[in-house]
Image (cartoon, rainbow, N blue to C red; front, side, top):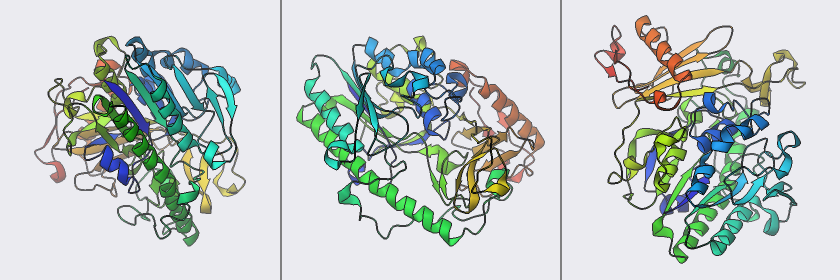
Length: 486
C-alpha cells in the first residue's frame, strides 16, 4: 500500500477535494491549536508534553536542536523508511526549520529520501527551500515559484521517478490558507461577496472566560469586521490552488494505476477563528473553532460516504499510517492510537477513546507592543483595535470528554487567577456559557484529577481506562456516566 498525506484546511472552496477524497469524514481534533506543536504531534504521534514542542518559537522547542536529537529521530518517516517506503516531503515543515540556530538548510530530518522543505513560516513567493539539504531560492514568478503549485509538481516528478517495486509515502504541506494569503492570479477575483460566517459565537462577548477573551471590544468595530472578512475571503482564494493540487495528484495516481492501492489523508494542523468571541483572526484558543479540524481519508477497505462518530486526534495519524505500513505499534513510542479499524473495520480490532487532552503554552513579547501601549508586556498577535490573541499566561490544559453520552470540556489556565472553564457542548455547542459555578464540586475535582493524570501520561497510559465518574446533583447531567480511559 502507498500513503499520501496532504496538510491544509478544508472549507467550502474544496469542492474537488470533497468529491475525490471526501464522502468519507471523521470527527477530528488537534491536541494543540498551533502550527509547530501540532505538526510535531502529527509527526511523532505524541502529546506536546512528551515531544516538548510548546509553541512556534525556538525557545518553545520548534525545530530546535533538542527536537532534532530527540523526537524527530523517532518520527513517522524513520519507521516508514525502515519498512522500505520511499519517502517524499514538500512544503512547510516546522516554523523554525532552516534557521541558522537549528542546523540551517543543511539539516534534513532522518527518514526522508526526498526533501523539499520551506525555510521558516508560510510563504507563497520569495522564499527559500532546503532541497535535500541544499539552499534553493525562489522569486515572484507565478509559473516557477508559486509554492502550492511547486509542491504538487515536484510530487509528480517523484511519482514518475520512483521505484515501482517499493511502496511510497508523500507528505505535501502547502502554505494555504495561512497568511500572507497570496492567491494564484486566476483566483484573485473569486469570492468577492463572501463574508465570514455570522453564526455561533461570532461577535459575542467572552463573558466568564479567561481574561484574554474578556479584553476584545464587543460588538466589534467596523474596522475589525472588515479586516476579518477580507482575511476570510483571501484564505478561500488560496485554497482553490490546494483543491487543484488534490485533483492533480489523484489523477496522477489513477494514471499510474496506484489510486486503488493508496491511502490518501487530507487534514490540517489547527483550526481558525474569524470573529468568534470578538477575536478578529487567529488560532491558539481552547474552543471548537480552533481545535476541531477536518479529516478525509480514502483508500483500500474504506467504504465511501461514511462518517466516523468517534473522536480522532492528530496524534493518531502517525500510528494509523504506521499500522497501514505493517509496523508493530507496540514497539513504537506513541500516545495516539490507530484508527484504521474504524475506517476499515475488517482490517483490525480497535476501540475509541472516551476522552483526551488539549494543551497549549502561550507566547508573548517581553516588551509592550508600541501600537498598544496600554496593554503592557507579555502579549502577542495583536490585531486591529489592540485585540491581542495570545499571551504568556494563555497557557492551559483541557480534558475533553466525548463518549457518545457526554460532550464536556474542562480547562485550567496557568495564570494568577487559576482560571477554570467548563462547557457542556451537548447543550451549548458554541461554548457560550462557562458552567464552572454550576457543576458539583465533586465532579470538578474528578475532572481536575483526570487532567493531572493526562498531563503526565505516556504511551498506553494516555488511553487506559479509569473508574467511572457519575455526574450528580446537577440537573444538566442527572443520571449520566462518563466512562474514562486514561
